[in-house]
Image 1 (cartoon, rainbow, N blue to C red):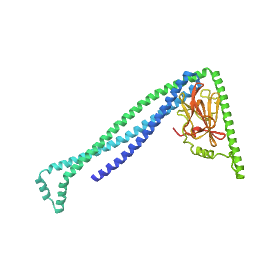
Image 2 (cartoon, rainbow, N blue to C red):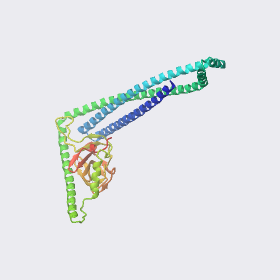
Image 3 (tube, rainbow, N blue to C red):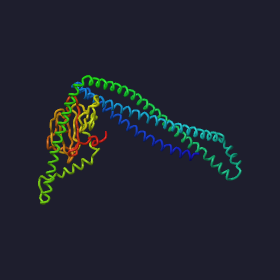
Image 4 (cartoon, rainbow, N blue to C red):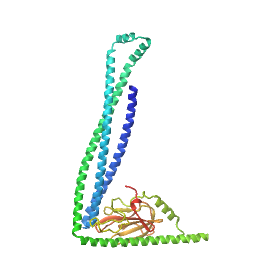
Length: 410
């Protein structure tokens, strides 16, 4: 009985420790994700306030509001997941508490029997009578050992009983804390649901405003399409020029190698090195600025006039607070700084055969030809047409790629 109990206690300790560790890791991960989502919601709300004071760009406002609604829904999903995880954990811990309580009851019963036995044998004459009534010497020896060890056994069982009671109390305290945590998450979820409903109403109001003045917003869309097309043409021109320069250098290097001579026009070794390093870091690059993606890569339909296709986005738009710093995502060389309608100042950085493009800057902290390092500030964001956001692109030579596939997961 005692040996089985000891093994059971050890196994129970291992199971509980593993359960606590897993729950702690899951909860920590959930809380980190929820905190990140709340941060993005706060950033978007700040953006909406700043932009509303400077412009009545309804399409820009709708983009931010819909992003906020989407993040709020994701936050609700995370809360629901956490509530389910807490409920599952509470059920497991309740079962463990019930098993512990059963073990305590068993130990208490065993301890009471020991007490009764000790009480019956408290008189030394009872001991002698008990020993002398043995059938044989073996039984007498066993009875002697039993009587001799009875006191030690009682003390051992008392300690085990106290330890088990302490474990049971710890388990009950943990259960109480878990239930309090679950109630707090449920209360937060209720507030999140109210916030979501308010944001959905705000979305409906903006959509109604857009539908009232269709001709005005169609003109804005036409202007935007021209700006996007102009930017894309300029980026393609600059990159094609850079690629052609690299090709000519490579041809010159081959000719000079055939003649066993060197030339200053040979391709720079660091260009080849950078290209390889950039490619190897796909999915690991730091974000150029801290904010939510408010417009993703590729083609999208208009959020209200759903049959209208918006101009293709060759990058991503990241919502930011006014004057936020924009940083290089990798070592490279500044190839051009240009100014484009609707995009403000733009910085093109070359990383071997890869290029990154940073638009909608107000102040620029670098110049053409500068070598930049990962995390170096390129400039500060500007508010353009009532929107404060970074337009960021990644190109592999003449082909634009989805920047979110290159940047590390948040």
